Length: 133
Image (cartoon, rainbow, N blue to C red; front, top):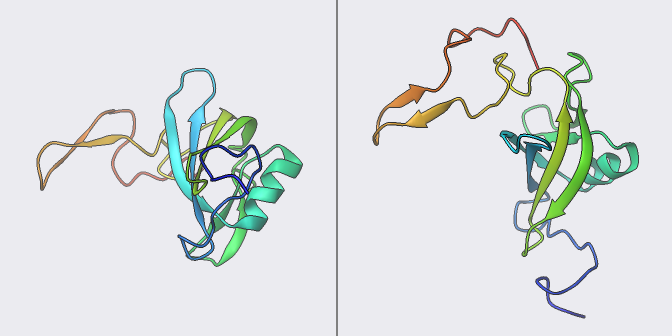
């Protein structure tokens, strides 16, 4: 069998992450990185079968469809697999916000130094979860 870098066969390596792979959601149009979560095999297969992002919740130990309760769905436009097949990048059409804090992206802070974070946007108050994703 060909090595992971040259094969055209999907063979995600769930073993490195104890049954999980990293899953990055990126806006298909703007290319903004929206969030990073995890997928188990069931979440990946359900995502492919339905065309909507599904993840594995480590805290709830269960499969979840992104936006199922909030309506903030992620419609899949394209899925890319990295060279080691242990991470997927999903180009999505995001309905509403991606972050549970009510922000469009989960990446709304930047490291100022080794101990401090700086907020990139001021549209939400830190800790405000009024627009649950």
